Structure formats: structure tokens, C-alpha cells
Image (tube, rainbow, N blue to C red):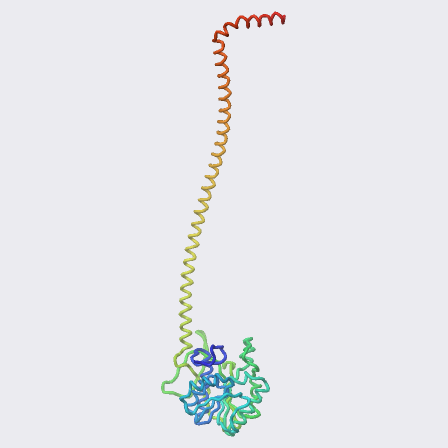
Length: 361
């Protein structure tokens, strides 16, 4: 297990695959030709994987890191390598005697300390390095790493461009051989029998040309006090992880894109079907609303007619009651006139009417 409990994207952890593994592991693989049979200091050794890569071909390796828990984890992980040890210290105050190492490896360290500490670190490298020793150091190229991408790495304290890095190295290491590093994914063709010459091309289905040398994302400098201390190195170094993890990731992402694209098409088809169904439902709802509106109009008309009938019934009932009263009065009158009393009173009534007429004359 790592002493760091999560991957930040800055400090490389064993087990992490992908582009960051290409960058970090390639540097140590490239450095192996310069440290064979030598006493090596791995300055800011971190998790210790790089020191362990160098130990099998070096006379001895000491890894120095400022974080005690990281050093403790590296000691435990690589305890089986007898010529490898890890110590806790700052790169500005190395716990090593003068001229006690033949090679120093310092990858992605210098940008993590300030301007004054960069000078102190290189002073310490000059102190502990033997007269014919070499320093293999890497540094991000600020114009390409940060400026061109408008990117600010929160872990970097003071980044350098090529001229600034060269000026830093010159006082202790006037002889240098510069290399550029940048991640690259392409196609490789090589002679089965081997060979040293190489070609680089770039192109498209319409044209092919000699590849333009890209700007360095990182500089790797092999530096020494004397040119004779610099060992020969290839003009081109290519590195790939043994499991092809980056290509596996790309293939997985391509398959994932195809899967998501298929899901998107299925979703679009389902959405179109739902929209068609929604349009049908809208038509049905509009038809239903029309029917309901017609039924409402008919119901309103029926209610109006019912009200008129109610009024007519009320008037008819009133007229019936009036007629019933009239009939009742007539019936009472007829019954009275058919009675004995009426016939007895009739002469008196007639005489009274006659008298009223005479008086009116």
C-alpha cells in the first residue's frame, strides 16, 4: 500500500496506469544506461519505485525524500533489495558525504522548490557528486507545460524554461546533453534484426512528411562537470508499459463511446416513439375535449328546456288551481240554486231586483 492515501495526479504511485506512468517510468528506464555499476542518489525518490528500477544495475542506490511516511513505506516495500536504502531528508540538505555518489537522478523535483532552494539543491548535488559523476535531471518546460495550456499546477512552486534551467545547471555542471520528452501515441515499425537508425513521419491519408520535432513538454538533462563524463545515448527512446494499459484504456473508451452511441440511438428511437404516441394522445384528447364540449352544450340546452318546462308546469298548476276554484264556486252555486231554500227565496230576490229598476227610472 502507498503511504499516500489517494492519487493527486502529481506524485506517481505504483499501480497507477496510463499517461503519467509513461512519463515517470520512461525517465527511470532512460536513466539506467547512465547509472550502471555506479553509486546512485535518487533525489526526491517518492514511493521508491524508480530507485528500485535502478538498483538491479547500479552498485548501490540511496533514495532521499522529505516525507517520513513515504520513506517508511518504500523501505518496507523494497526491503529485499540489499543495495537499496531510503533516508528522510531535504534535497537542500543531503545527509551524504562529499563526492560520495557517482550519479544523481532527480526527476520532477526542481519545480517543487523556490528559487533560492533550487540553487541550494544544485549546490548539494555538486557537493555529493564525484568529480566524474553525472546528474540526470528532469524539469517541465514552462512555456509548453503551463503557458501554452493556460495551466497552473498547484504543486509547482517555481517552473523554469530551457534557458533558466541551463543557467541553474551551468555553475556546477557546464557539460550537458539535452533530451526532450513528450507523450506520444502512434504506430511503430522496427527491423526484426535490430538497428540504430530511425525515421519519424507524420501525415494523413492525403500527405506524408518528415515529422516536425514537437516542443518539449519536459526536459531531461544529463549534466556533468566534464564532457568526457557524458555517456552516449540514443537519439530516440521509446517506452511502453508491459501491459499496454494506455492502449487498453483507449480501446475501452472507444468501446464505451460505441456503447453510449448505441444507447443514444435507442434513446432517440424511444423518444421519437414517445413523441408519436404523445401526438396521438393529443389528438385523442382534443377529440375528447370536443365531444365533452358538445355534450356540455347539449346539457346546457336540456337544463334550459327543463327550466322552461318547470316554469310552464308551475303556471299550469296555478291555472289548474284557479279553474278548480271557479268550478268549485260554480258547483256550489248550482247546488245552492237546486236547494229548497233557493226556490223559496227566488220570489223575494226577483221582487227586489224589480224594485231597484223602478227606483232607477
